[in-house]
Length: 333
Image (cartoon, rainbow, N blue to C red; front, side, top):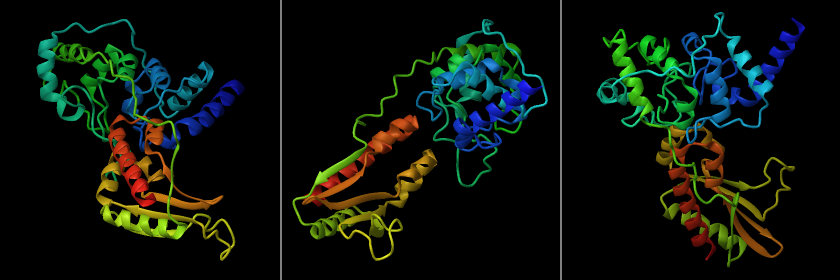
């Protein structure tokens, strides 16, 4: 009993450190799907959790935790299992569904594609919105993802299709009139996706900060930046010294100035894809005078995009990079 108590405490601490930020403190969900739903815990075996933690979902927000030890992964799984009173299901990793892939493809397009995508690419964004309860996974997972294909056994997929996931949009295919053979046909079609995604490469991300030297004075550079921002149809939100709030009022460095600006249509679009972009949006550019040089600086969105592991976000971060580079160049002339 002492060992179980220690393992439980360790699992809780590890979960809080690595999982709670996305899946919620009590597994209720957020950026990540809710893990504490009884129907989910009843339909996922430990092997699925283990492979998911190890492999993640390339390009789909869920990272791979290859730095954790086997004991740590087991402790996290045990903690997640603590949210259910039922014994975990055990699926065979070798059993394969036998079915007609062509017929399965027709059924997939009729019953699955609306949520999971025509080619199994999954729903759009992270699944988090600002108008729906977060205890529901409102994004369908990518079935063509290499992480999912490796983690989910045919038996697990079969049980999910047969019984659905109570508390989620996923319903029972049996209740919709499909036979077990139809379901096996769908499984064969899902396996035809293969899960061979290209390596996730968001693009140039070597520099964490973009820095450009201005040819003008500090004051002229700040004014040029304002005009450039407005000229690009962005709204100025606020301006302040970089060290405001960090030093006594009246002692701020007047040669360190930060400008916040935003295109709210773009902001709302990107937040719907991944709420974590709130870490670097609204846009901001800092102008500093240091050792006789006037510098314009801002973050490199692609560096953060690489950390977020969200392929859908990459194109917007590339767009932001091009915007920042254009603003810095024009304001520094």
